Amino acid sequence: MSLKKLTLPDNVCIAEYVWLDGFYKLRSKARTLDEVPTSAEDLPEWNYDGSSTGQAPGTDSEVILRPQAIYKDPFRGAPHILVMCDTYNPQGLPLETNQRHDCAIVMQKAKDLLPWFGCEQEYFLIDKATGRPLGFPAEGYPLPQGPYYCGAGAGKIFGRDVAEEHYIACLYAGIKMSGINAEVAPGQWEFQIGPAVGMEEGDMMWMARYILDRVTENYNMTISYDAKPEKGDWNGSGAHTNFSTQPMRDEGGYEGAIIPALERLALKHKEHIAAYGEGNEHRLTGTHETSSMDKFSYAKADRGASVRIPNTTYASGKGYFEDRRPSASMDPYVVTKLLVSTCCDIPLPTTKFSETRAEH
Image 1: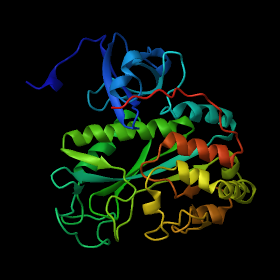
Image 2 (image 1 turned 60 degrees about the vertical axis):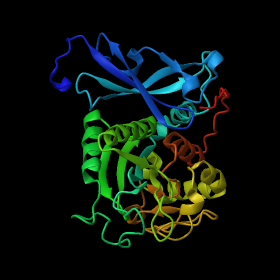
Image 3 (image 1 turned 180 degrees about the vertical axis):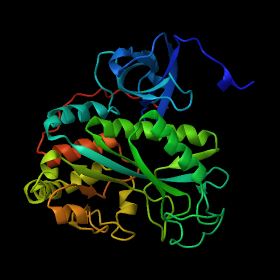
């Protein structure tokens, strides 16, 4: 008998609480509610054993989950939900892996500027049998880059079922997924989240990653967000982040808001690179459609620049720009927070974080 055919009582709603552990990996557990919440504020706080997630010692292991955003559950179906949470110690201090806390503070200060984001998440599907990207042989290499990007047909596309299932599941959940495409290497895919406003981007990106983890369980695959999982003449994986504020989108926004923002980014290039995810020293080399991580640059339609200014933005004198530096492993809370803080001249919070961690 299939469990999916069973009917639950009308007053039952299952809420899957999702959070980041001490290693920036996603975890979750479910609880039963006796009514369907209309917002995250309707949900109770919960807790978990932080000593099992690298976030607390066994002698004081309780970590508090605070619900922040809810989505429809594509695995259990209606009326069940997925809940994006952030994490705190019992005294109310955010854990050091809780980058959402400070991101929310910055977004609140910038709310009148209406910051919009669109993140392009690249990733590789990894064949567990070989430990290599799907479509790569156990030894040696497939044909060079060329036929795979946005391709179709056997021998060129690997893992479309996973990418499609993930796409549909995210749209069902209510995530603003604007599209997907096969990328330049076998087994490499991309999904795009946005346009999303403020905190929506980070919450939706993390939940989309969680849903992708769940989808691949059924295919016995894993996901790699490594910036350069295959060394050599292969593109790496990034998370290019499109950004704009209302002044950038208004008439005259190119000269009046975008160029000043880019000049601010140039002054803080090293700080951004340090926070833009691991492995960029292997990816941002000045080759394979990347800039060098050692210097900041911006240019019209140039995918070899740190920041690409779209032709439409340049021609209309308003719009958005694309920061091409973030690694695929970036924390979207950190990247969006830094973009708003630097470009909009908003000071970063000086939050005291709980530093207690445990070896896992």
